[in-house]
Amino acid sequence: MARDRTAAARAKYNLTRRALTLAQRFYPKVAASNGNGCQLWTGSTAGTGYGNIGLRTKPGEPITTKVGAHVASYMLHKGPVPKGMVVMHKCDVRACVNPDHLQLSTQADNARDCVAKRRHTRGEMRPHSIMTWVKVRQLRAEYLEGATQVQLAAKFGISQPAVSQIVRAVTWEEDGLEF
Image 1 (cartoon, helix red, strand yellow):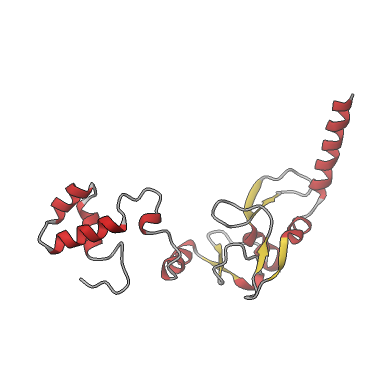
Image 2 (cartoon, rainbow, N blue to C red):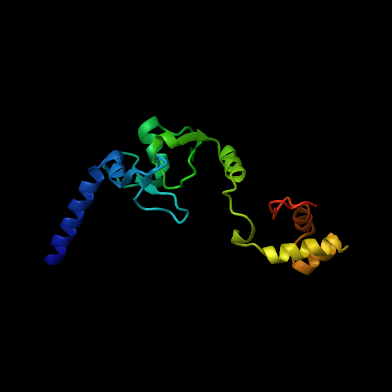
């Protein structure tokens, strides 16, 4: 008998939640503006630091997909996101949902912006990186002493093109480094 009441209470709760619009679920999870004008998402987040919220295809239906909280903010304030476009932060704060800090962009432009602002994962921070800064500096020193790229590739367990990019500072660039 108690189990039936619990199931009924759960069903009533789920129906009540399903009746809420995106806006009704979104705004309670937005904190007041911080010093730089960002409005920070306080709801659930992905491991990347971006907020997320569920979307329904029809009111009253179960949540069918999750989107970034910044995407939901854009949708609520500016309209749908056109196919092939992404919502990009101008402020570079992943938890920000201030619509004035959001703009449409292509994924390629968003990636270029990320690299230009040096926010992309690089060096030892890359999950599957074989090299470390200590090894990179050792490789460059040995290259300057006359070791060939093929020899260095074999020694460090990386490809010759990877060695070429390292010695030319295409990858693993250091500020003020000149070759």
